[in-house]
Image (cartoon, rainbow, N blue to C red; front, top):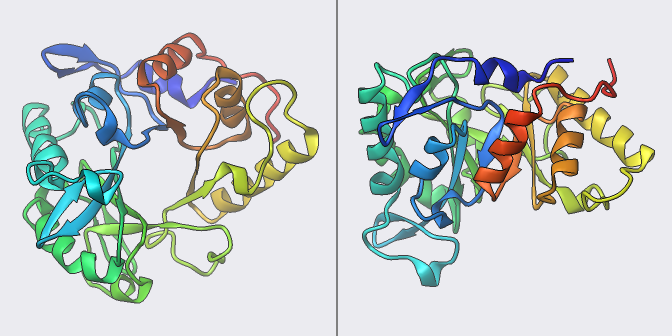
Length: 271
């Protein structure tokens, strides 16, 4: 069957750094802030999701993988929100100049309930570019914010009449009764569920387990992503064939090369 990436590759190109860019659906720039140009490298390759770790330090939301590496100038606003706002302004109201979903995943370090009120105030400044949620509806914006890591309590968000974030769910905590407007994503550590390292045979029992997880959460209307994943083309191909929604990518250039040449996914996926 044709890859879902084919459609994205055929979309009209937008401009990043003055160069045309073809957006790639289902591509997640893991620990994006560790790239040479946070956010902009991901946009230059057409990625559809970026991930930023944040710490609350002196009432500022600072971006870094470890607390000891935070610096005052690297804020969530300066590295991500303001540049996205500028990009959207340049591209006629969308990130890539097309009606294309873009996700900013914010991985909260520390106490999510303490971080959330500060984060909420910062996001309100950019609410005109963000997806808005309520308990019963969603109004899509150019950027959807999903909270991961030390997430705030679901009870803080669930009944809000207008919220600017959704939550990244976990396999063991979710049931079909949990709203996919509150938990639109499910992200898990690959090594907690599978032993395959992305080289050699993907054992049938593990492949079946992956199919079933994906099928379960697709039935509930959620997107599926695994982190701590092998970074091999064989692994990426297997994830696509099994219906995983987002490839968790560290090497942006290599992943794009793989996706561009692999417009057709092997026909071994189950109905």
